[in-house]
Length: 195
Image 1: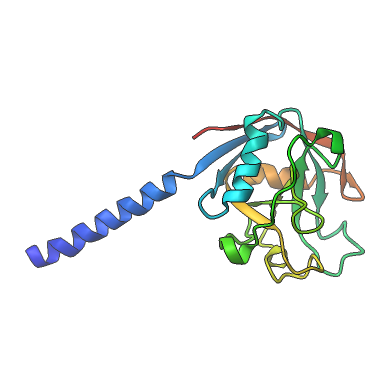
Image 2: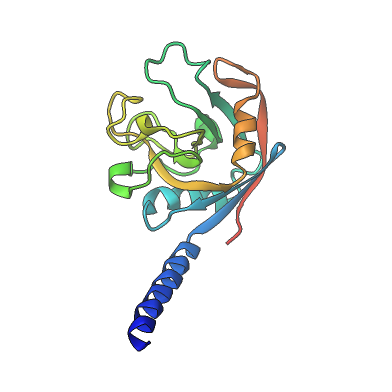
């Protein structure tokens, strides 16, 4: 009996340890006028990108910002490699950016892939990401390191995943747009840490 009990105890301890590590991830609530989205941030895997996101969160800068861009299969006629995301933040106005851009954390370094619900940083050149982020709708491997959506092949910096409210993300993505820009922005009422 003792021989059988010891492996069982090891398995239970390992399971509890795994859950304890999972609980260390900070959760962020994104409240919108379309509903709430809960995101888990993977700080240990993407420390630079997570810390940058929290600078904006903790300063309250995302309150009153918006989701303003939606990318669907039907609204990117000039892109050979198609993706599906919603994008939000302070937009690309320079006067709204109190913090400098951050070094680029690639998915081959973090291990966080662009799966359904992944939150990631929008950017132009590598090292230009600051306040703009996007959430994947469906798996988007072309946004990972080596993907072909961006010609430089560096992909985008994923740093967490939606754990509740992906239905809200999809609802936002379905809203009317003009050239990928929403005709009516979806306001971020608040964005704050909850754990």
